[in-house]
Amino acid sequence: QFPFGRRLPCDIYWHGVSFHDNDIFSGQVNKFPGMTEMVRKITLSRAVRTMQDLFPLEYNFYPRSWILPEEFPLFVAEVRMMKDSDPSWKPTFIVKPDGGCQGDGIYLIKDPSDIRFTGSIQSRPAVVQEYICKPLLVDKLKFDIRLYVLLKSLEPLEIYIAKDGLSRFCTEPYQEPTLKNLHQVFMHLTNYSLNIHSGNFIHSDNVNTGSKRTFSSILCRLSSRGADVKKLWSDIISLVIKTIIALTPELKVYYQSDIPAGKPGPTCFQILGFDILLMKNLKPMLLEVNANPSMRIEHEQELSPGVFENVPSPVDEEVKVAVIRDTLRLVDPQKKKRKDTQGSICRGCPSGFPRFACWFRKVSSSMKDKQHKHHSLKLSLKLKFYLKLGWCQAPEHVSEAQEELVDARAENAAGKGPEAGLPSLCLKQVFPKYAKQFNYLRLVDRVAALFIRFLGVKGTTKLGPTGFRTFIRNCKLSNSNFSMAAVDILYIDITRRWNSTGTDHKESGMCLQAFVEAFFCLAQKKYKSLPLHEQVASLIDFCEYHLAALDEKRLLGGRG
Ligand code: ADP
Image 1 (tube, rainbow, N blue to C red):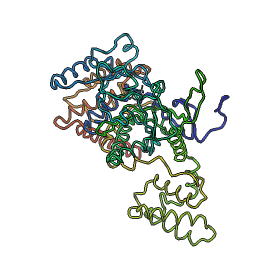
Image 2 (cartoon, helix red, strand yellow):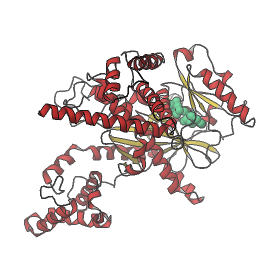
Image 3 (cartoon, protein in one colour):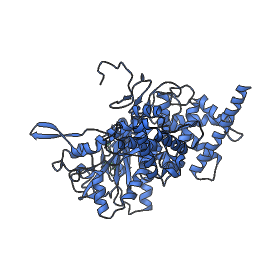
């Protein structure tokens, strides 16, 4: 803490709530600009919906949602249509105020007409969502999972997931929603902050029992019942990666606005809290993402009436300490410096050897050097780890993160590294590890790259009419069927609609979401009969091709 202001630059800045520093020029900050805005209920729902439009099957892990008040008529119409087509469908919906947390203002309804329009919806917009009526129960209780995810870098995308999380239990046995029990929050809402006030809440010293347990203890129980826990983990990993892929385009717009490329600035990382509900059939469903998850490892206990004391909470400690410790290990600036000076891995090897071959030469020569006993021991251990992991077969695929892991393990095994004696990492890298499986989903990222290119003046997040016209002209999108006048009308129509949704009035112009909508419109016009994601992919290719040609022409022109 720097109550009187900071004097020296730091390696790592740990902010409590959000990214808010404009005078940091180096180091790493534990928050991304715009993350708090991005994970608000409405913004998250919009970002996921864009992906659902492109890839409905891949994004079926998020309950159907409508944004209030603007989509109320749509909500009513769609519910009526679904009820008409399936009269046996008896849905329940959950209304959640935007920007709320800890269950604040949440209520369940059976019919759209039950929404409380007592002025609050106008002043405080909300998301109304299909309620998951058949959650998985343990000990007859509903519970949700809080998983910690480290977004280590946005460009290139690097994601880690903690191997263990928390399971937070309701305190009343679960029954499917009926008009009689809709109001029973201890039965339907799993928030710790609510259930702690129930007489049934159990603080436990044991991670396997009580109202808050480790997720691993639940997995053990499921596994003993014969559940396919491996598949469940892989579904959870996929949910996390897909959600982050939905968030990255807008995060990149915020990032370039706060930390313009080419100017000195910090890099960012962030620990996110993912709230996930398991359905009876073990399908994980995303409830929400928390940009500022609680890292408390104590809870309040009432010793005698009115007398409270903070006591350690073993479950929180077990999970959260590991998350913070490993985050610091992964972003440790000393590690980077050590590696850069050590040069034991050949990055950009001048000899042109493949990475592993060159590295192996270094190992063998340094083994001969008796004066560097520790170094060679470490290298030989490294070699052993590489061989054990089978990386020697495809050394060129050894990622930086894998190298880091090997570095750390080898140093620890040699008993000399700063990480010696620390437990193995609880944060597991999932991206770029599984990049090949998910990269095809990153279409909106490429649309965002086009948007950023035409933003012009750095520091803005909205595109002006001239920028939009330049985009159309440079990408050769206007023709006899689509005049520049039509381009202007498209710009005005979409921008006006988005600016009236009340998301952000600070700047005028077209926000990324509006640009994405305009882009989808153009793609549908140009490539009529394809599915939407193919239309969009084709238009991106088309634009990127013309921009690359333009860049080349300018480069040659410059040389000439
Ligand atoms: P908050 O940020 O206020 O905690 P959440 O979206 O996490 O809001 O919702 C609070 C709780 O409500 C969740 O922890 C979960 O128990 C329950 N819940 C939320 N959405 C759904 C849903 N679609 N289906 C079933 N239960 C839900």
